Amino acid sequence: MLSIFAAVLLDAFLGDPYWLPHPVRFIGLYIRVFEAWVLSRGAAKSPKALKAAGILLTLSTVILSYGVVFVILNLAASISIILYFICNIIILYTCLAAKCLSGEGIKIYNLLLKGDIAAARKQTSMIVGRDTDSLDEQELTRAVVETVSENASDGVIAPLLYMAIGGAPLAMAYKAINTLDSMVGYKNDKYLYFGWCSAKLDDLANYLPSRMTGGLISLAALLMRLDFKNSFKTLKKDGRNHSSPNSGYPEAATAGALGIKLGGTNLYFGKPVYKPTIGEDRRSIEKQDIKRTIMLMIGAYGIALGLIGIINFICR
Image (cartoon, rainbow, N blue to C red; front, side):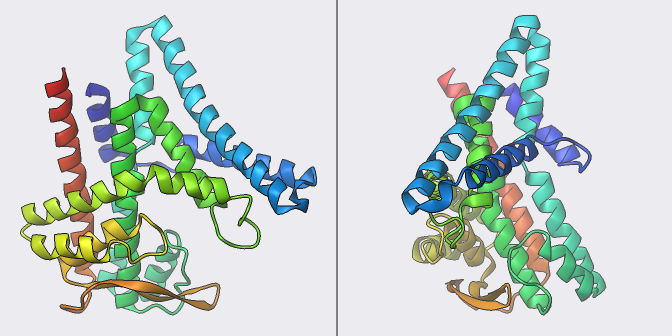
């Protein structure tokens, strides 16, 4: 728990500096090299071969991510307990993204506050997959609210949960699963079979954390004197209104707490894609909702950290 608390503080102060070599970059490099090797070997000739290669990619990436961290920590422990704690804290810190997530949201909020829509569109394009060139202030805000609330699970609560269960090795294994899904877990012609295993494993790994995140956001809404009842109601009613089996839950809790509607039609590479709506239009969405969403995420984070600390204390 001391290592986890220290990692949380480190993330709160440092975030993810661009100059720092992040483990996810090495995981991503391995995935790209493996994918290139598979294509060069001609394994892309049949769906069955592609699916088998994708399963091998998923298992090898997760096992290597877990194993490398496990070996590093054991080597550090054999040298010095102090070195072990330093390595453990640093690895745990790299698995958390609360500072980075909130920081990106605040950048866009500040640009909208200045009325610089062009810069806000460009900044938003760095954290979302949809086309942002024609988005107005409300649509940019919706994009940021959806991204921050969805990633409150993937980048904050889920890593925290897995490090509490299995320490740094399991937390890094989760980051590997998350990275696999973001790189190859698409239902398009290129990755439908090759990314099948990665997408399914990501759905499984996020099943519990996403639902926990939704509940924690509702609790955070209660503490922030937002609409707790509507947050919980929307969580239950609209949590499944998403193409992903997990992403809708934190989005639904956020939409209910703020009294806004998320989802709808977005453009991806110039093509309109409709997503089921989440929440109700009790009021128009406004740029201040970005800050409120960030506060809900931080509140959920704090509650989760407190609950993990209490459970750890009782178990000990």
